[in-house]
Amino acid sequence: MLAVREHVISDKTDLPAFLDIHPLHHLYGGENAFLLDEYETAIRQAGFTDIQVLSSWQSALNFAPHSLVTLQQAIAARFGPLAGVIRRALKLPGVWPLAVKLLTVWDRRPGRLYSFAAIKPRT
Image (cartoon, rainbow, N blue to C red; front, side):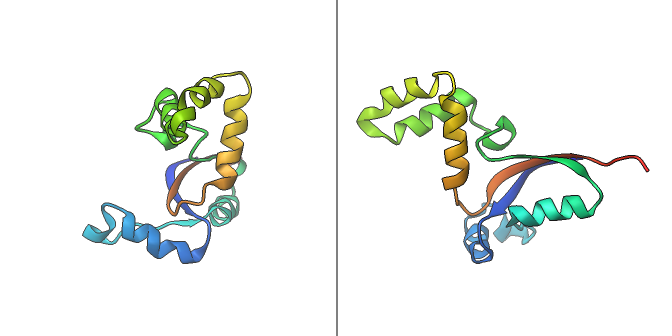
């Protein structure tokens, strides 16, 4: 099972903010977002196992249209005069995986994208 680019919120009160900023929701009203735990629980209750969760920062599936290089450049650019140093640091071994962990914890944007992969055992 693959579920890609699913909208995640941190708190139920974030849903209206997500719906307000979604570019298509006002056209057809069909968008939604759920808590990360709700996705994982639903996947588990559907009989899937070995759930892999990919945050907004862990997969090009989620951070597209950025590539890893342009994503790192965009992050570094937020540091103004330190952008060059940050950009180089993010390329060092072990730094990007650590940055991904920190970004995943700190990122609370309503509607950030996650992807899920899981296996449904044969019965």
